[in-house]
Image 1 (cartoon, rainbow, N blue to C red):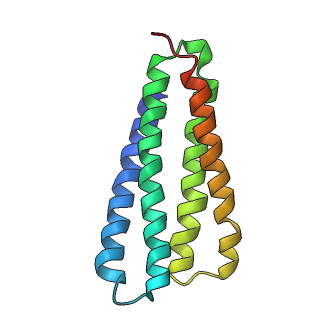
Image 2: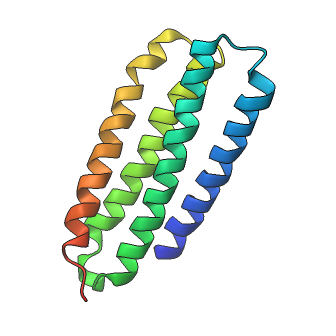
Length: 127
């Protein structure tokens, strides 16, 4: 499971960098400043949570095998949050329907849940 979260983290970080470059170079002349800001927020939060996935992998590597459930759930919450939060922001900025904005807070809830679960998981780590 640790390897899976490292692979997800690296892939998500690569996509975040590509999205950031796409926004800075290809979209700057095509989107109004507010929509470009929305797109950049999606890329920024995707990168933050790629680092979060690395933290999940590290915590998993330090937990006893019978105490990994919350850490794994934390990682999947980060993945779901990235898809819902960043994905909805990317889609809205690129011309998606405004109702996608209703999905964005669900991604934020996933992010918050993931961090809280990670904190509880870390408290179970062995020295």
